[in-house]
Length: 491
Ligand code: CS2
Image 1: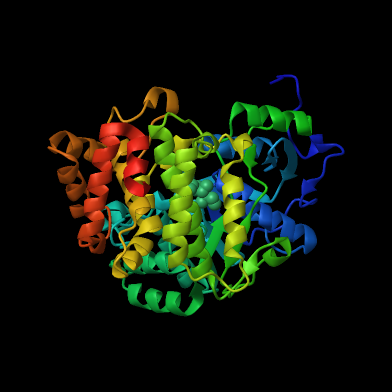
Image 2 (image 1 turned 30 degrees about the vertical axis):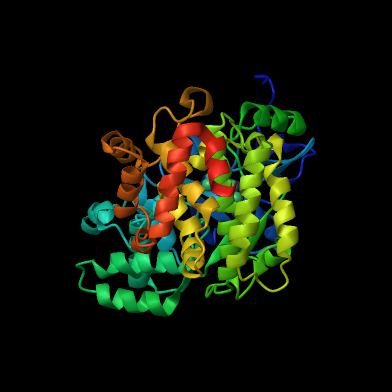
């Protein structure tokens, strides 16, 4: 990349247009989690909506810890490029919808103050499955993770920041607010409501009960389904953005052209006209969410784990292997589709065709190790409902069992795939899984121990036939790698 190219900035934009054209003059939205997904999804929907209908909706972007992205965006007047990659074609646009940028770890009380500010009407979140301080098996608040926030005044967890921000809001003026999770968590609105409620219920403050009542009356937690594949930004993506913009961008994001956002329309303080930017307001968000978490995310996980075992670095390369494709198609058509109630008007067959074309998008360079990371938090959300539904009908879903077996194989066994070439999987349970594998005599013992721990819901541990299928398929993966696993699962 050329070091002589001018830096992206409002002044340097020249003939390039940014979206929206004018910098936001108010900040009605606080967003926690300034990662790539936010920048390529809600921030872009907001920028497009503002372009079509101006309003008091700039974003205060809050990174949890990462000073890098905040420094980069500050240096560029909040601007960044979004690179859309469609097969051979690519296009870049400049987005500038952030009005202020903060790092929560450096200045938690400023974040609390912004959430409490009467001008803030919406708080959105993309903090990943990890960011909710919840137990994966039950979804309940993991009190150990928020203990310091319960005791102190400068919170360091998302739930602590939200609860302390609401407390101050309640004490200062009591204006209503919407808190909107945009993470891949089932019934994400309800989930955050319960976690914030759990935190407030443990506060020792004299007004804690009144605060709880006020939250019930004045804070909405609409559920949402978010969708857009946003890979880690690779050097090639950066080069392309620089070529297309003619400016050097320190914080570009690359994304597929596809995007989808379904939300419940409960915004007591108002909202941008996101529907004009393509979002869908619906009473069937749970159906959208289920469809997406199962068809896209569960299948993504299967492709990622089998891909690692097959030595593939990217999702597109993994799904290009006929056996892996067959396993993914079996999972989608034979196991997941029969568990879904599609939202009215959504053509599932078309969605699935488009889904496989999205997985095939090689320009994204979407890494298998990225999708495979945090499986101990992702898989419970992605597979549990479908497995239980199918087991209730007397069917043992073998491709879902293969997904879990391949996760355990990749995360627990140091020799399962070439970490050096393909990248390490990050997972909060990785050390524990490795230790468990060392101590287990065989696949059966290992898999049983995983289900008996608090990773998956207890109901899954009771689905004996499913657990046995996972153990059998894990043994096949150990014996003959991904081929033997797929063969044993679907023939
Ligand atoms: C992926 C998701 O990394 C993963 O686990 O399955 O990030 C996926 O790309 C998005 O949910 C797509 O909307």
